[in-house]
Length: 309
Image (cartoon, rainbow, N blue to C red; front, side, top):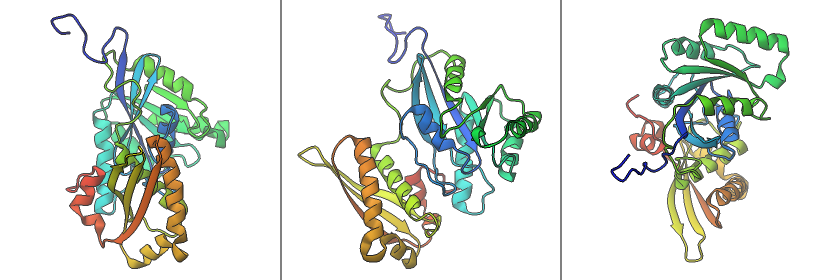
């Protein structure tokens, strides 16, 4: 409190705030859940594993509490430098959180990746919550058995059975988090939903459309960067983005016959970017071959990852 007795920005009696990190195996439903709890799209979703590469923070307001969800890359056994960087980033996101939520795909159960997460969670000092996702897809007796198995391995403060896609169980989760996070000022303005700049979010949206369109054909090693974000006199935005791939054969896949594939990707991305930016968008996509971009320090800085991993 300053000398005039006024509280700092965001500070008021009864306010609560805190960071909640989500950890899980690839495709456990972390990004879908963050978007659901925040109430709008702040992180991309696809069936392709390891879609989330860096920490994405989604900000939700609930009953006077500002809940900052940290969506982390999926935790798995790393094989390459990029894999190691993502796993390291995931655990670093958990390290500074007030509460760590482990999300488990109920259909898949305790996989090798989940085993690895549970083992490391035993050493985690923060309060821990278990989220059993996709509970609408398995029978109750199997769900109860899975819950018993996991909670015997790690001591959790609470267990929630949810469906990130359908929303069941999410209201109870939000109520609990709002009551349990510490009292204190909000970290962000009340109307902010993410700490991801629009320039970066737009690149992520294009990458999502790329994966959705070419889920089977395009290898994991592709990356999108926003090279230009220019506001025009009429208030619209001109955006130029480059899709980086590692080989000419991949470039041909992204372009498609007579450019049809990249045109479809651009149309889908433009529509969603326009909604996020709340203005008319002129999107121009280019495809470039950059061999071994996964070993380029500059690309890691662009993604917010540690190249030294």
